[in-house]
Length: 392
Figure 1 (cartoon, rainbow, N blue to C red):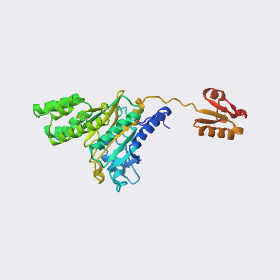
Figure 2: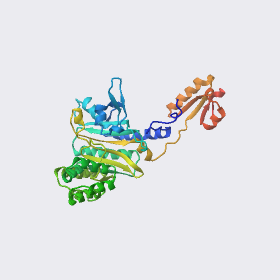
Figure 3: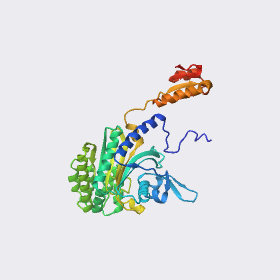
Figure 4: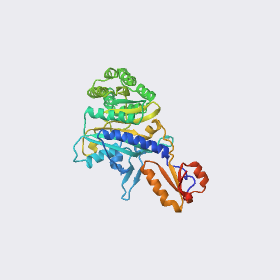
């Protein structure tokens, strides 16, 4: 074994120690229960998928895909997200199932990171996909469920930003009529590079009035009068439809009594190119990165020859665990010591305690090098090594 790699891990890969594993398991159970209670059924997909299908349609850049070849020479990828694999399942394995279809998942996804990125290349996602329902009620359902999942995980200080990709697409189409420029501006907005966004606008050859409207996009963030302010920037069919949908969605949110968690931002942009409508991202007070995100993707199912509307969300379990209250305490199991003569008695006693709900370790004294130190560092429930079964 090379000493250079003896204790190292591939870039972006991380070890998870017992305390954090147990905390994640607790969050996973409560969040999964919330999702099940809303009628979503869990599916599992392969870790490896074909590049030509899941990899190419995932909206994750090729530079972030983990690729390998199978024995037949086909290019495979470690799944970079869960939305596309579930779209594949819905279009094939559920081909005869009536819509709407409510599916959920709990899985690891893989995205290669840059050397200086410091981000995990493997992380756990929990989420849902609501397939075959194009109504705003479906968007409201997944948004509301996402908020309930955050609350069930014990997250109290959080907010969800809601936007609509149609507004920016309509605005840029009206003012620029140049897809390349529009994509560049959206990239600045996605990266929250507002300085770069403004500098690019200054270099455009469009009218001063158009430049002013483009700059005013930045004023829409967290604007209480967002609807009126956004309506003043553009009035074409795409922007009108987007604003109407956002306004209606917010009314649904208020009906659910969750408006205090939601902020409207029509300048919101997602890194997933398959989103076609409503977008949302969740942030916690003490977490700088996105905690969860989702939205509507009406064009993706058509790539698998079963065109229909869909919406969903995904939560980052590692980030939930980082900010969820409560630390998992180091467990203190009861320990039963035994020797060859008392093995059967010790195991019988341990099984009885486990049936009562206790955590029990059975330890052969021959497997311990320093028995005195072992006794000092463990909660000895029974010590059968004397042959008398005396309680420790």
